[in-house]
Image (cartoon, rainbow, N blue to C red; front, side, top):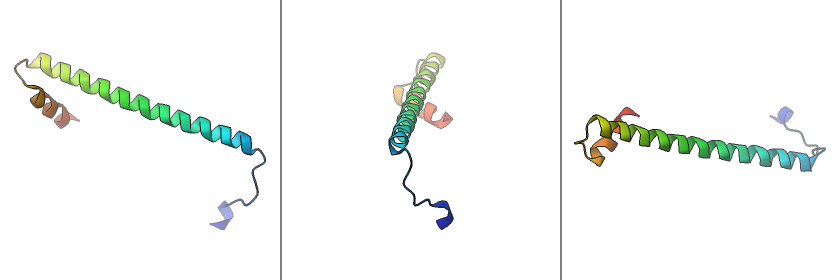
Length: 69
């Protein structure tokens, strides 16, 4: 794959560093947002299961939630 590699030094290494740093931060924020959304959705599903059948225990609701996902 020598044709895809460029052995020249980048013209603007500081700009590339800033670009990659910004892209990395954006990726980190997106992953954190996705994790928080997943947590909120799981809690909403647990609340819905508790309202649907108040007799269920917590472990049963968690098992019910994990069988849906």
